[in-house]
Amino acid sequence: MTPLAQLLEAALFASGMPIGLDALLALDLEATPDLVLAALAELRARYDDGEHGIEVVEAAGGWQILTRPEYTAAIERAQIASRPHRLSAAALETLALIAYRQPITRADIEEIRGVSAGSILKSLLERGLVDVVGKAEALGRPLLYGTTPTFLEHFALRHLGELPRADELAVALRPATAAPVPVSAP
Image (tube, rainbow, N blue to C red; front, top):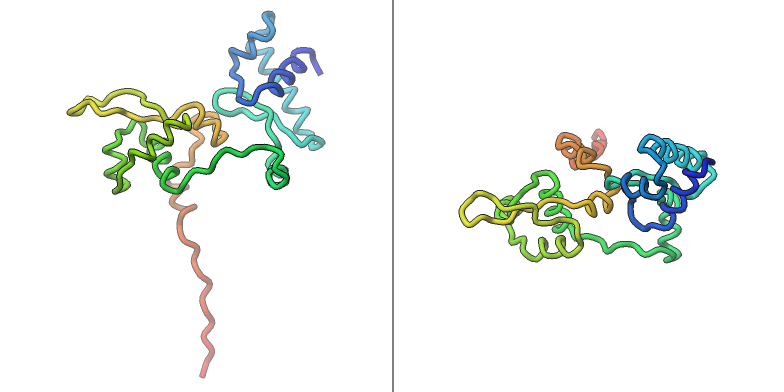
């Protein structure tokens, strides 16, 4: 393994959050973006050989060392790693609206959901999953909400383009069709 790949491995291991390209470049003043990307590819290949319980993942505009998905259940069961608090169904619904329609106002969220969104928005803001991204040109200049890099990290997305398309969601959310019940002849 190259010295640059070893340096990147140490930095990714030490960080609990994704590290962006600029921060990785700052580790070695002689490194270029192409050299860092090549070292990351070398590191990924080393962990992808199937002999490791971790992997190098690109998420939220950076790279991070994470546990392989097949081992997370056992680690959680043993309570070795802390798991972020789960989001309620209402919070997930609101977050999905923001992710797909951003920038969006609180009034638009409430109109679509049919309920008040104040406490849910407050919770999402506190968790850093959404942020105020501006003000609408409408009467009263309401706040506009959008997702944050923490949102991308939480859902292991590199960018918003990785969100499922609406037509994919329609198929995934369609109720399962029940098998026909055989009718016996009299």
